[in-house]
Length: 295
Image (tube, rainbow, N blue to C red; front, side, top):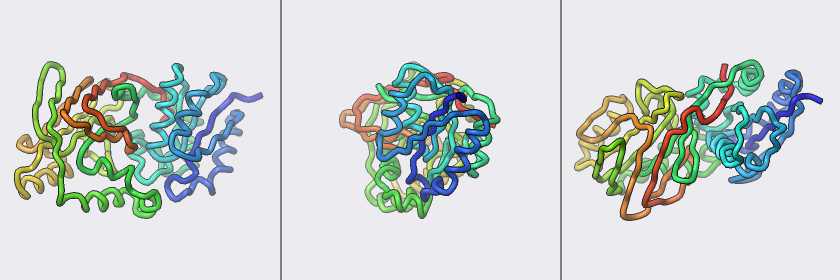
């Protein structure tokens, strides 16, 4: 009997391209000496629930899909109370986190790297009672990723998020918040906020900062104030895309723990999936929270 591997994949992710690669991927696992259990997800929450109930006999778990599939797999692992090294074959529309780990878009090569590579101790994030891999965010554009139809994601990639978001610019909502971080208090109306551990978000590289480390115990925090006029709104867009911090319109800093308080529930997204609405949120870095296979 070979070593045991659990392979979880989303058959609908990223134009369903894994269907044509599945046999080759399983062959790579078999040649490396693994006896593989295959679990294709059928709907939201499947990967999480299956991971929570998995056997400790599996010495490696590989997931394939978008960042949402990875999020569910990691959340289920944390919920199970024991860790298993993870491999990730990116197959979604955007794959921010796969890019941050320098994982190839070629699925066969990604599978080979899982067999040949080494474990990287990567940080995670806790979000109240939940877990996220690389981004927790609220405000402008954050509802887009889980409200955009899957077909649109597949056809347009990350541009689907942008196009959907552009429809909302005429009615930008702001969120009065009290933000606490390492003894500092910020009280402001924000249109957008993100706490990240990634080199890109929504397909935009370097939007999270220039000195990002995925294993340093710190998040990159970006909070954008409500613009007073169209010129300020334009400055916000330019500042984000060029990563030139404009302190008149935004806050950018590092944090290992940060709390948000609001008088009304605010909708959050975790790794591009619906994170629920909350009046009180505490986010904390889980230093070296998972072992993920890299080149």
